[in-house]
Amino acid sequence: MRGGVLALAWRYLWARPLVSGLNLLLLSLGLAAVSFVLLVSEQIEAGVRRDLAGVDLVVGAKGSPMQIMLAGLFHLDVPTGNIPLTALDELRAQPLVASAVPLSLGDSLKGFRIVGTTADYPVLYQGRLAQGRWWSEPLEAVLGAEVAQATGLRPGDSFAGSHGLGEGGHEHGDHRYKVVGVLAPGGTVLDRLVLTDLASVWKVHEDMHAVDESDRRALEAEREITLALVRYRSPLAAVSLPRWVNAQDGLQAAAPALETARLLRMVGAGTEVLRGFGAVLLLAAGLSVFVALLHAVRERQGDLAMLRMLGAPPWRVGLLIAAEAAWLALLASALGLALGHGLTALLGWVLAQQQSLRVVGGWFSVWELLVPALALLLALVSSAWPAWRAYRLDVTELLQAPH
Image (cartoon, rainbow, N blue to C red; front, top):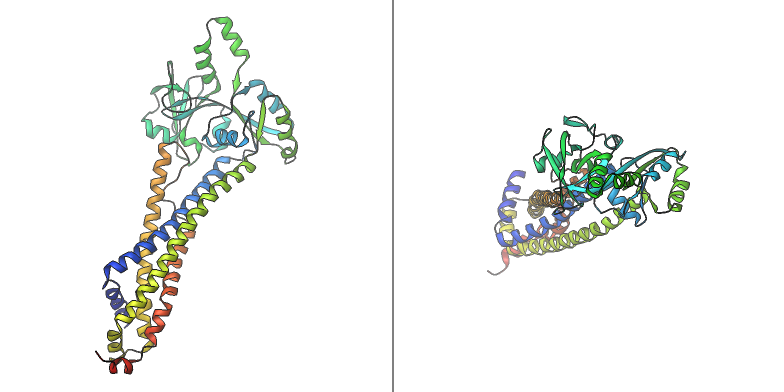
């Protein structure tokens, strides 16, 4: 008999396809907005925390700490400038510093940044090779997984970097890098970087600007790096080291923990807007379902009275209305989740074209289990009064009413 109620509720649901389709659309869009917010915010937070890689401080040229953090850890902004190579030695000499990893930026490969650094940098992210080996001399490069996929380069191939951190810069055709390795996908910032030795970056730019040997020696004496990623030896460093860095001429400290909290608050403002949009859609869907079911009870009074005469108890008639709403909730849950994942995949594709944060449509959050529960709760609440009206139908009065 329960199967009969569900089958009859399904037929009743699609007896008015336009109304049911509208209710399904509103409910699905609201649930998709909720699912999209869950998937994107969770992935962004996970990606941001993963790319922090235990770095306690980012040191760069004077400027915005947020810009330094975005450029140094996430490679999503341009750096504020360069700092002297001697500053790296001074940082490493500090007793509260456990390690300081240098980064030199300035060139790119088809929009992917070329990062001059040391072997300590991929260790921060537990980078592993999928092919080839690590660089051992200047102008050898190891490609991130996304870079290799986008460019088609493999170990043994060569390429020329372009000046600047975006596409369209002047190509350094006289200095071609040799690909010696490709990183395994790790879901970190390494996936979208080209790694090479610090000396590679210096060589490219010194050869470009040096007129003679005297110029070369002068440039070597003035070598710079762009940023330094610092790890503390002791928690006490968090109090004194940023203050010391900011007191140095031309240096600026950015605390990733502090700047990341600010960044996530800014991202959170956007997610709150999307949550509000989803809530409005769900409220509209709930009201629409309520009105539709209330009208359905009035239109089907004759059918419901006939069911009662055939022996159906009042609770089964009320259950029929609730089952109709439950069908709507289940369909909307499936469509909403599918649409939420589809929108997330679309956003991930857009971000991938911009070499930005990694977002994928295949991500699953445990909180998504609440989406069907939310849909079912909303549908049952919306159907409560119409179901009660169906339960309270007076069969005798309906039979005596003139037709």
